[in-house]
Length: 313
Ligand code: B12
Image 1: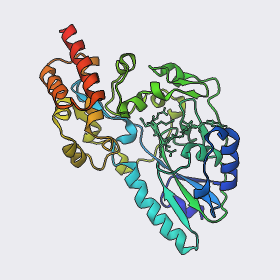
Image 2 (image 1 turned 90 degrees about the horizontal axis):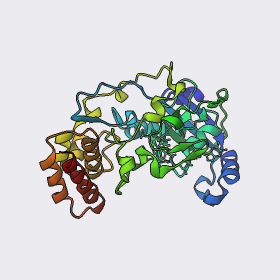
Image 3 (image 1 turned 60 degrees about the vertical axis):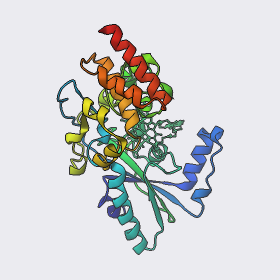
Image 4 (image 1 turned 120 degrees about the vertical axis):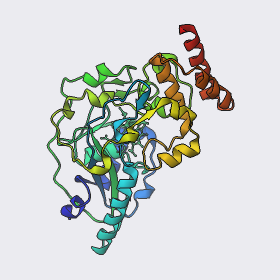
């Protein structure tokens, strides 16, 4: 049966639903989680798709990159087709299966860890022995018992590179401060405190804690063409600031960074312009202030940036 999964994905590891529930109750009792969605089901199969870690060179300072996980086709779409096909095949074997990616009530990384797919690093990633942090996860709930052989256990040892490299001190041993994480801040519709915003160099997400991870050295990612970096991994800042939300959703409908909408990307682009001290954007910044008067968090940041730029001019 494992072979059936491996026709579609790069790894599969299973954990029983009883173990998942027991471990959640042990370590997350404060969350008082509702497990009724798992009723009648026996196993969680965690599925992984590896993605390449190579990045194109930035064309020039007037472009900005999105996080590596959002290059190439949106992994939700890639997984969706695979999960549907798997559900059908399993059904033919008399197994009921429900697949999902990202939106499940399950903590995918925790399930992957319990299933023995890898270990949880200080950078919060599920770190796979063959693919490092560069893998997307999905889960499939099954109504049958199913076992797989776990990978050997590993851990971060004395390594603290991600903790030391994080420019906003969002990581510590066994701790994660979401409100300081550049990846989190770059996706949130809220004004960004200047000390954190000053660290923005990416349009969406952040890769620093993965880039420095020694477990990503010497890995051999699966070079699946759908996840290859393409033209759209970096965006021209001026073009972006002139774009409407409708145009964004049309131009980038198959990419994992468009779903939050144009406003967060514009806010991030403005901070990048400020951080790189780029000239020639005054009119576009003023336009943005004008256009987003009713979007307080963007309006506030755009005005702050305009003031900074004026000061520097
Ligand atoms: C919301 C979300 C985010 C939020 C914040 C999430 C967070 N709190 O970590 C934001 C927007 C910041 C985010 C960013 C990113 N995300 Co995200 N995210 C999710 C999502 C949808 C839910 C995660 C969540 O809220 N979990 C619940 C919270 C409360 O758990 P937590 O405390 O953070 O999780 C830890 C605990 O379980 C902890 N833990 C606590 N107590 C204990 C006790 C024991 C004994 C143990 C062992 C563990 C443990 O270990 C867990 C893992 O670190 C998941 C998909 C999913 N459904 O799981 C993807 C997911 C975790 N994200 C993913 C990715 C790729 C990213 C980004 C790399 C994207 C980017 N480049 O910007 C960044 C990484 C930033 C980082 N350093 O973590 C991948 C991770 C793949 C992997 N190899 O691990 C996932 C699994 C999506 C996917 N389907 O592939 N993400």
